Image (tube, rainbow, N blue to C red):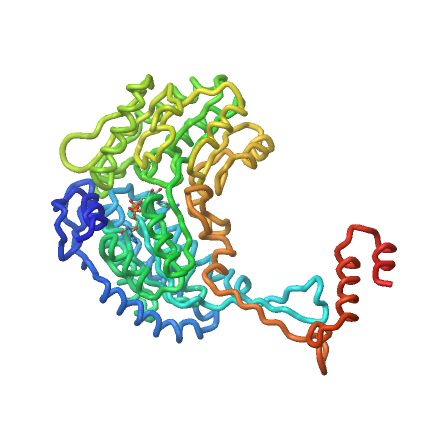
Length: 524
Ligand code: NAD
């Protein structure tokens, strides 16, 4: 087993972590430690066979009309909704997330994504004519054809929403999809596959390959035409390099370090509520969670105090047995990371305002934590935490907040809070992030209409939004003559001094800076 596989195993829910290869993945409930089930650890030959079956199935799927594919996707949506309780229960157990979040941030988003793309695809993927600005004697058409088999590699934090989002886009566009879910949440992906099959949809068009990192690497090597990867920056670099080796296009949805800027006129209550929800939803294990707060000195203390007060009222526990606000942490490594950041911050002068400890006893829990007095010498302000820890920093001006918000190697989401939405909009335009929300947090992660993705090391390419549907396709340009052409074209052979002279005059006439009179003179 390679080092990569050992690393992946060392993260897996903290169980059977002796670094040895295991025949099967074991999925444990992070809130209780209960063994929920097993899944195969698939090797390269099995993955290749899956991709081959997907390729064959894609031919018939891709030949359906867009409307027919949309109708079948809606059947999948209906089957998911019919089995909502089962899906929510498993999500809550396998990921340790509150049932509200399993419902609203996972299943509801998937249902909406399917509904939206089934509706817009016929128009978004219809062939369209473009007007050529120079070659007016020709007509140009763009056609969007499926690429073939799309490989989707996904993380554990939203184990239904993230993979199915990409699978849905791939399928609506006429591709087959092979999903490699995270090794720590394989069961929910297998549940989605079970529901797909039970709905009578073509089995090989959507398949799941389970395993550790090497199974994902095998998927990239198995002859896919596009890889949509969501995960950490370090893995993303390896995946992008592997795709580069094989000249496969890829979409990279990587880590985040979302800043929240509270301007001097921010509404205290809304800002504090947004910070707490945005920082602690899914126990902070969100690529777009509020990972650092820059609060103007005029509002800093009031926002901080209120955020601490709300945090104290949050209920944390096993989401499968109770309606809690904050659930479990997926595996012990994430708790270690949170503790490391907190220790570093306190050693450098930060104050612990609330939380700060792992919970003793059954399950993996870490208290929702707020730190104040933070600065950019502390790792908590500069590196991804991916846990329930929110560091506050007081700033003296909007410009200081902007400079610090942009002082990051990551750029996925960012948030601005202000009573003046136009001011917020202007500031948002200067924040270096793929998405900036004014007076809101998190919602864009599940908004199918708008593109989602990062800049800097948060990745490249976009998922969601109509363009992402077209990105699932090869764009083909078809050009025809506008009027019947006979004989040779003036651009063809033979070259002569006369034709060269005419083309040179043409260069000046078309592209020199003079006015129309000057241009006519150039031709004559
Ligand atoms: P990860 O990078 O460890 O793993 C992601 C997936 O990649 C897993 O399925 C894993 O098995 C697979 N993988 C590992 N090595 C591979 C390889 N060499 N080739 C192919 N596949 C390989 O990430 P994680 O711990 O599961 O998720 C947390 C990270 O994901 C965080 O950094 C978070 O910010 C990021 N994330 C980003 C987004 C986004 O939309 N930008 C969304 C959610 C999570």
